[in-house]
Image (cartoon, rainbow, N blue to C red; front, side):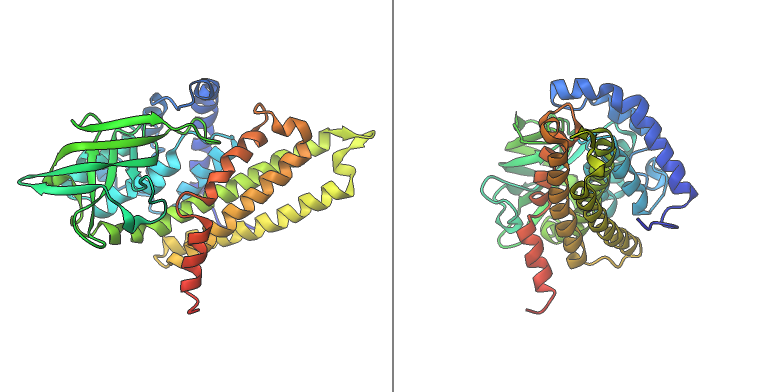
Length: 378
């Protein structure tokens, strides 16, 4: 894989910091997280203390001022290589907290972004509702102005980090059509209730929940941007979200391939290692070629994002290609593990289950194809 010159010494120093953190603070907790099916909140504060969350944030809010998406990419890669899918830093740092930085007032950033950087608060975003799926314009949760407050009523589902979240950015309708606002709702606010932890196929330690809003009153100052411009703000951020998903997908491909290559060198059949069989070698070679191509495109999209040139259709292409390839790779890799691949003690088993949602959240593969086709003047 050709990545020469893509990362510099500062990037590699950041990688070393993440690798050390995972070794000392994440891996020892994995068994407990698997048992409890949720990541303990203490690890967020530990990551914050080591300046590993939101490295792009301005130093005024506790960040490192590293406005380069490659730092997020490094974190995503190291978590993938460690087979840790429940520590939702990519969501927290790469998808949700950027809303605060991009659209928050000085007071909002001082209060909320600072706590996201320190790990004191876990942040989530609540868009999806029962029956709406990827149809953001179909949101029914409503926010009504009442003097100096907004009153929110409605329900959300499939909200990642919904259990652990201390702050949720809630998309709610404020009028007709695309009149939607983004509202900051803190845990413990009267009327705001977290429902059951959803029982998922994969990502078992990454909490996903239903959220309910019953006459939830928040100050007028808890609106991100203008209360009727939330739809436009979300559309603008979706490219970054989809690129973050793509970075994770291709990193998982790399990790699965690495583990499978090591396995076929050791596992024997009919008196010789699996790696000596032409079928295994050719399948792995084809995987590497496809992964290298996907990695090159994702890396190019990261640099385009850094330069402010990433388009919605490019991000959709990256997500479509990387997540579809992830499904193909983990399936083929699991097959090479045979019966052992079906056992959860092997990372490839968890990778297989975790991979399926990648083609659904952040916009389904079908939505990605629609976005791409629109850019082709068809």
